[in-house]
Amino acid sequence: MSARQSVPRDYYEVLGVDRGSSDSEIKRAFRRLARDLHPDVNRHDPEAEEKFKQAAEAYEVLSDPERRRTYDAFGHQGLRSGGWSPHTAGSMEDILASFFGGGDSLFADLFGGRRSGPAPGGDIGVEIEIALAEVLTGVTRGVRFEAVSLCERCRGNGAEPGTPIRTCDTCAGAGRVQQVRRTAFGQLVQTGACPTCGGDGRIAEQPCERCEGVGREVRERTWDVDVPPGIETGQRIRITGAGHAGESGAPAGDLYVGVRVADDERFERRGSDLVTVVHVPATMAMVGGRVTAPTLDGDREVEIPAGTQPGHTVTLDGLGLPSLRGRSRGDEHVLVDVVVPRKLSREQRKLAQRLHESLEE
Ligand SMILES: [Zn+2]
Ligand SMILES: [Zn+2]
Image 1: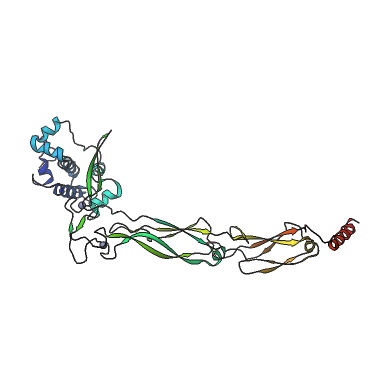
Image 2 (image 1 turned 30 degrees about the horizontal axis):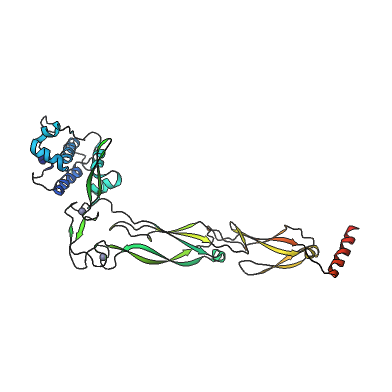
């Protein structure tokens, strides 16, 4: 057998199939040849690429019902006079990609076993709100959400328990079938999920009663989410694998828990520091005293020195919030608001007047 022949070889012969072969037999034959002749596998046959291109050409014709009919009736001449020419320019990778789809799925399709990549499950997003005090300690919060899950009855294989599962005839177990699209650039051959088996490659003879053979069902799920200390509004916690179940064999998606820290009217948060405001009467600011300031660790007495000015802050070390990394806490800043009384009794007014005059001197 020589690699280059002036007369094109019979396409059925190239693929090693009978003239009456089904589409799936033809596809299987080509997949087998492509696998055997692929340069990553076959490093010792210098004619492998040429053989591969012949196989690709044969497959291109025999996998298309219309072209196959023309070829059966009129041979190579019939195809050529109909204006068709083989699409075997480009690298093996390009040719394979045009039949099976490119990238990882191509490689998985040819070399990764039974079928090309089952789709992984989607991600799910939920939101929770926690109190500011819970930022200090961290908290475990249960969340409830609906997720595509493996069917409890058939455990995801879609078959009624105890009944057999057979390989899909339409896609010969590949899970994907070829689709031809006509575009401005000519015919584009793409692969998509098999309509018969839905991409599974296998069909349950007796579908599971509970999920009707899908293998998955939407169920309400609960999850205890550990919220670490120091979290801030807008941050998300990712729980790997807690999202929607994937197609059989593929990983589940992730659960993303968006966190909102509820406002606490006593505090303003600045990173890991807290700011609180205490209201101090003008007279206390003059002579000094003590006020109570709220902290996340309970109320604290704060010393107001004599002569305290409005806007003065007292720092309570280590009474702020922890940071996500490292457990050291920020500080709490107590901001002094000096309150001037709006109304005075006659007696108070007299006292204030006397103080005023004495200060004037
Ligand atoms: Zn089921
Ligand atoms: Zn199928």
